[in-house]
Length: 123
View 1 (cartoon, rainbow, N blue to C red):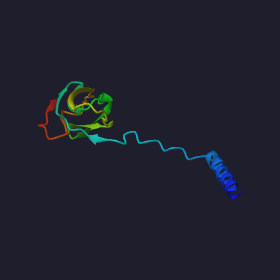
View 2: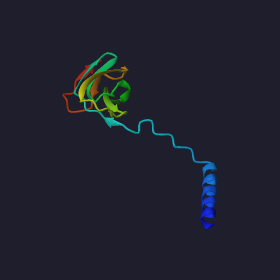
View 3: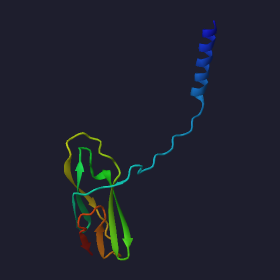
View 4: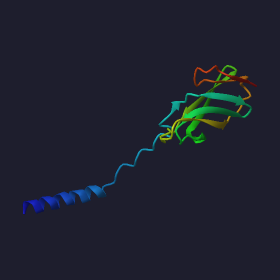
């Protein structure tokens, strides 16, 4: 009889707990994963940046965030991966093109991602 009462008590408690209001889930940070991306190559031209990265099958333009910081009359460009590539294909190089808004207050654009010789685009 004690076992039946215990089971009844436990199931009643579980029912009550499951009906209690729960705290809403916290909204995930939009860019919880944000990592500077090593570039295999890149080129700058009016209105766009093309860069080559390593992919294992799931990389796409939406996987990246482009940030521009103005320093004096230069604009420093940083490319961040915001979506990891968890696919399992053999790694391959992938060419991505993103729009680049040109700022009239920048005379020069410099890509800051890695130690490749920094190419610049003059205004």
